[in-house]
Length: 159
Image (tube, rainbow, N blue to C red):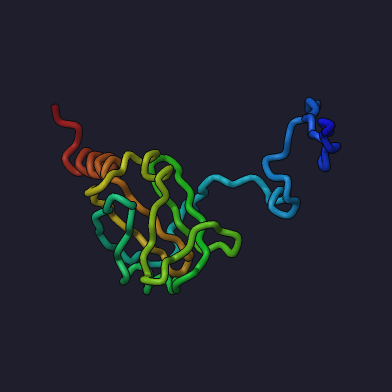
């Protein structure tokens, strides 16, 4: 018998060195999406706010169905979530990658929770603006600053 090795069916692939910077997504349509904007809030509030308080669990769940009802957000509603200056802004966006879950709950992504120093058991103030379709999540650090400003304006900076 002779030792005969058949030719390779699939030739080896040797990667070449790229000279141009790779696109973040090679699939085309998604790569054309514009850069993510920062959360920009109007200088004036839009309409009347609906407030709620909730305690986040380990998964970042927001379990205030009254807030979602006020906003008119149904399960599978696509949302965009932005963080700016310690606030989390959530708003309806047909291109959003987050959704209202089938049990009418929202989950804050881990990155947003880390940026705002939120952990399991953190209490947050929710401010929904139905006319503007916006939900603002106020972490305790932001509330501390607001309360300190109100205290100083009412009582003065007495030393």
